[in-house]
Length: 376
Ligand code: CA
Image (tube, rainbow, N blue to C red; front, top):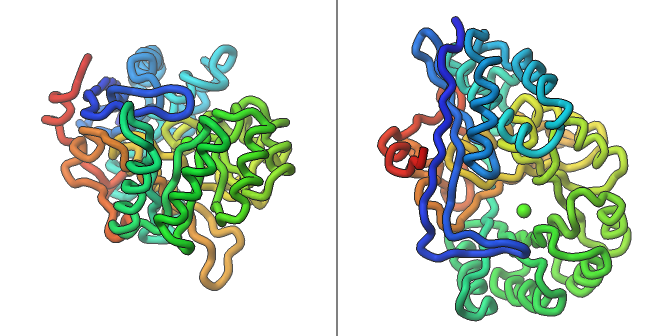
């Protein structure tokens, strides 16, 4: 069996309500899906995180190394592609493109062997995961203290045990918003805050101290991702556990975070940090450093399915009676084809999402949706 075709699909849909986070905004949602086909007609799907047309161009440039290759040789292919692009591609788009290819190859391996990826990775440790709601993006109009409070109340009523609030604009106003959200969701639900690296070190420390009484689960991306010394300052200077890593790549990138103890929780994105192959390695490294792993997820149902397969096998650290279980990031912001791209949506039930048990990623792609949103 060999790979005979590698296709990229760039999809885009306008938003009814454009939204923003600390440093940027969007009026559309887009995605780059990767489709790899074998001479037996078996197809695997993957997704790349980040600018879709650029990811598609890099995946196309990988094509000559993929055509004719054994689709079950995902590890060998990963090494080939990484080594070919290493000199200019240790981080960023070369790795997000590689991630989409790697996920598609795992899906293919699963389809070929008629096994879910979690079985090929050694067996599942859980059959479902608790999801937390990501949302609370800013709109062009209205008072965030009104519409964000309403939004998080809605998540609580849908059964979500945790919500993440977007901050990173202004320390005093952000603190006021976090306090209002905590009051709205009650004292027992998990509350996470995400600055999308909008603060400098002193602002992040000031914010963390200001809301120290609100039982915050983690403080995500307080400062810019490349400045690990500032991450350590934020860890030392305020009491909330520090999370990050959605803008970091491969085992080598995370090795620096782990050895320097810059974060309490790492959040590699499966569609960005190197795919399922690399994220399993990073997760195993994190256990050796005693650092928690909560995947970053922000894409279509394909990225959600990839995260779920990885979540199924994330090790307990430590194993004990009633061990701590990893959480699933469940993006609730507007996305026209997030679920429509799947023939069966990956929805939550009272805040919990089941791990798909079908072959590969356990999903099927809706070709009509693919055509509908394609901008190729
Ligand atoms: Ca984030």
